[in-house]
Image (cartoon, rainbow, N blue to C red):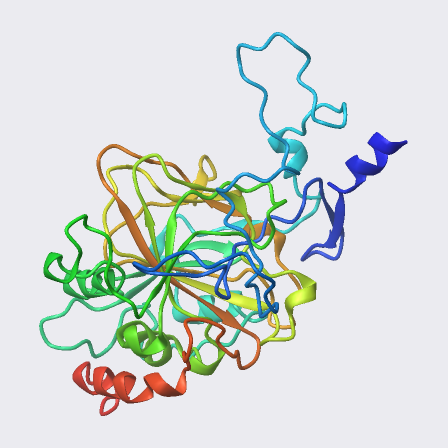
Length: 388
């Protein structure tokens, strides 16, 4: 009985988009955020005295060992592969079982000419409202700044909707964002460690040390004022309210690093601050030769033959919706960042959008209001304010 009760801790039943239930055989694998146990860059670790819980400050980085996490059995061990409770460790399919029969999954049209702005709006009717008036019906930016390639919307999947935004950033803008996390060499210590004390560097974390997801990247939680180009483009090009944006993050994946299957929704116990995450905006700041793609477990490419995968391409952005506008989680968006291979490093920046106004938790003194003057300057330089 004791073993059975322990195993039941791995089982959670959640509503699915279709109204049926998806049984998750694992502690919920949610992407982390909200200042997961920040550590000042270049600073010393804080003592382990008692702390008042604020937001998600108690989260332990997922890549640190925990005594209550099931450890894998070595491949050359002939002993029965059982967990600490005498049960067979769950397989990946048991952790993330197939969606219930009848779940709506609609691939994107194989012919891009069949995609129009109206079809995108139709696919988003149950999701956060986007203002796409700066795109024509062919999904191309109507008045790009002189000398810049226009942004283009590309349908990667229809239901659930997944969009690629081509030319979201220029290469120069990507470099500027990377510099927020790791400034140029002249601003670094001799050992190459970041000496920027504005952004908070953390070992990337999920919402629970019990989570089955593996994340081995490094994240920087940024002041909104450090990311004015991201905010200006999200607001003016997509109509996303800045006050609903979570703290912008920059994430680095070195060769061999990954983020296994997880959901971007947040636990029901943490909805007081802004409600559920209803959109994920992720921009790629570098090219990756091998691996490093964002893969959706249940979704297929337009030809229906491959798992839907967005390969990192510098300047492109990915937009998808971990929950509906009313806060219902959409478990169809289960995804992962595959292992980066070769010699390249994967850099991304991301921001999650909530249902309502969100109050930032980290870094200290962070606020959307403090960024508005910088956002206005960038908006003027990109001719957003005078070109509706």
